[in-house]
Image 1 (cartoon, rainbow, N blue to C red):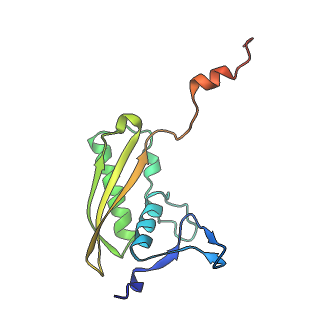
Image 2 (cartoon, one colour):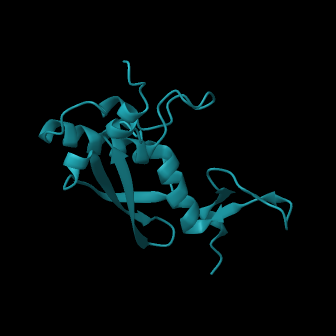
Image 3 (cartoon, rainbow, N blue to C red):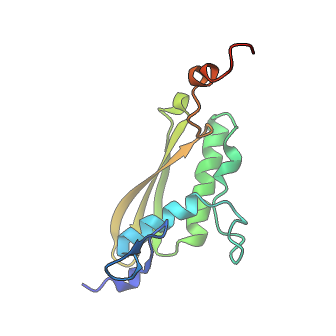
Length: 147
């Protein structure tokens, strides 16, 4: 079966192959999954030529994770996919907040590829806390003794 109509695009982040002297490309379902990851991690206005592209989940980082916020997150994901990924039909968006005390919310997207009628699942990790590796115990040891 010829699946070229599903698309072909650069891998993200772009990687280059010395043997082919070119950019590594993604095709078919892998291209769709990569496009979803880029869409959900892009802030609106970040792309100059497509200012409406993106999901704006970053603006919810410091909000408390209550029912209203979960509904808003799911709505943002659904709207972004509806407007910017025409190759798929969204079946469901669910949030797994079982690791919320660690600052992680998993956004589970179930979708169907329109042209092949194949179902797929995509999980996008949303991190509520700032992603630094600063350890307070290590930082304290770096201070001079007279401070």
